[in-house]
Length: 629
Figure 1: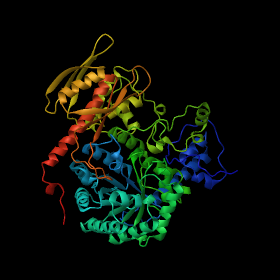
Figure 2: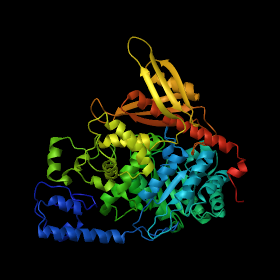
Figure 3: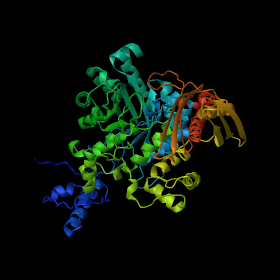
Figure 4: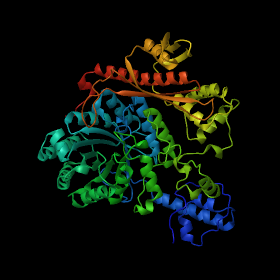
């Protein structure tokens, strides 16, 4: 039986260190299709023929990459039929996950990273949901949506979500109009169950609203309008064709087909996209998009089925976060296209996959939602091999059990570098290690991190990559500091009540101290913090994990809290106000210190959000959301 599968999906040029020699294949074309990574691994000796073959493969790959540059952006068409736009909705749909609330500053940081990753469209939020969200989307549009001019500089589209009403569309336009490439994304439900029970409108009324609101969005001056028929997966086909035809006439440039409740199977969703492409009049004047929820665990499969059937925009989130069971995962969709593109009719994206690992970690820290160890592509175990048979194969040739090179997603194995960090390591060595594991931070951020690093290195014989990442998360990936921890001291045991003394530094620099008792040292410390900050909160979740093995391991803590901060924040789909929850994380070798850092992180988010909401409430509504009517 002949197999045509590639030994590696890698496109990196760094070869692994092989231990055995495999004779080169007699087929030059087959060798040319292999990546340099796989070729290098397959050859134990750099013979002249292997060197020529490797150089030839690199030229082929360089030629393919040159031919596959990102097409010039035009809202309603893509000049290369094989190019697929990646629409990232981490900052909008992803933030709807319970406890995933991000501050405006955090959203801006994540948006910058999404631009580096190369996503085509960043859905930055739902501006009508709250004044804070409008300001966050506006900030992203101003900064991330206007990169410096230059050849080859990627300009992402900045998108704001809105329901089909003028107030929402006005807010979305006010937020995104500052971007070089703005987009308004508006939606209305089209399934019978939604129209009857939620909207309580007839199909004719829904079509009229959709047409009017798409036309209104275009009338504001927005050249790029996306329309979504919510719950398309359960909508009547003929009705779908009709409403899509009407919104195209009204000016829609992208038609997003959501499987809102994750109900369809891959062959069903692929057929839905194919049927829309074949039966919707005017479809050649718009881009078909997918948005798949993961309720049955099929979001990635459905997204790929949609792409193969003709969708040329795929809506995804980092780590697959989102409402309920989440969305299609960007890293899974992108790497599947990159790895199996030959079976997907040659489709490709503009994603710089070497930034995937860092982006995943950044979203985990800012959202507070950590991925399970066996998560595809970015999970801790995704490139780990414990089975003896697997380890034997890996030592001989990595392609035996890895279809993707870790380098392709920006992941490096700690044992492939010679630098071992400890208490004697200087700034240069530490900064080199940061670069090796994919982190580039400012000089000020580095100095803050280096101070924490030295404190840990004095207590640990060896500082691992995992320790470094935990410290980075605790020192760099944190919300705006309002209250900071100065000192904490706790006592506990079986002989008496647990007590804790906490010293915090207030926003004005004043030191405040409080003492309290509790059921344990963490409870006592949290009560002391509450005495100082005096914001009513409820601790919803508390969890702690060890970063590495050993008694001297760093502990990371994650908490989720809620308070009395509603401020008319609205859910994107239901429109109902809700009480936001805020997550926080902390890291330290002392579990009480780690716990207090996490609690303060969450409270700082809450204070920041409450402060922004209060500031906006003092601004007249007409100044907050300007209508261009």
